[in-house]
Length: 232
Image (cartoon, rainbow, N blue to C red; front, side):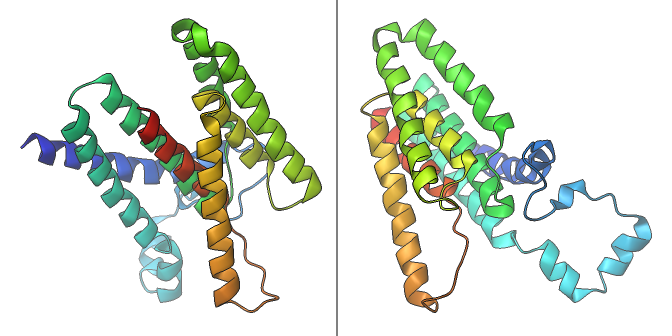
């Protein structure tokens, strides 16, 4: 019974995160997103009725249906597993909270090509303060991890403009502050490996000269969540 309830809570969390991924891009400071979030729209009743007759528009509005459904199902599984593995504990809160945060970043980047400062900056501040208060012994490693991750991604962005965005750099720094040095290397290596695998797969499927945008933040988030499971 408790597993079922935790799975339902996870499903609800996944649904809420999908809604937030449409709402939060309005706070972007680097310019408009690649696609206008549907949560920004304020349609009239006539526009809503007319859209029901426009099948092309319906397909556009539901373009992320399978992505959001997958996120909701994954959230249900993760929340149920966290309860089964850890019960009502700090570890369960860290797993579900970290998963939710990284899922929100991943969804926002996939949909709108944005890694929001409104998410990364407060999270970095909370991590630094939290480590300073409760993990003073390893605090130097935390600072080194954040600076090291930031430096690596900043250098890649300078050497290969367009491959790594400023949001990815800040996300890498966030992961560095989260795990510290050298634990953050696992998250970054896993993320980079997953991103490289996706790029190779797209290269094989498409024409050699085809250029497809690959959001990098979801792979970093995946690596960070796996590293979180390893360290909890």
